[in-house]
Image (cartoon, rainbow, N blue to C red; front, side, top):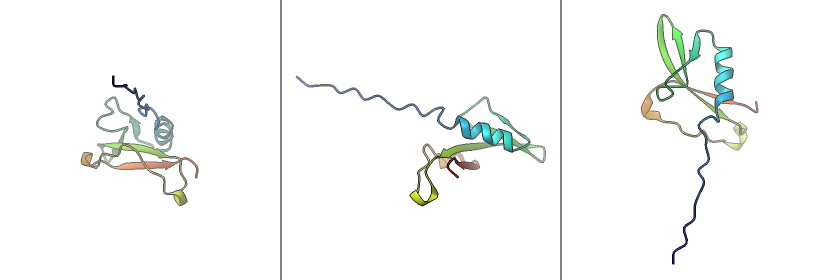
Length: 85
């Protein structure tokens, strides 16, 4: 009889919420998006709207931390908040 091992998947969907909130506070002309597939925030620049992807990295730059779930195929600006700096 084979033994089945159940592996719980770590939920990372809301891991960057703090970084997103900080971005929205810091950047005038930014607002939340209602479609996370397009980006985490929308920024208005010269009467045009741009989706922005926001990530958080808690490692120091000396430790070469990694950023999860980056999809370069989206071709949108990426903002990374280093929370320990």
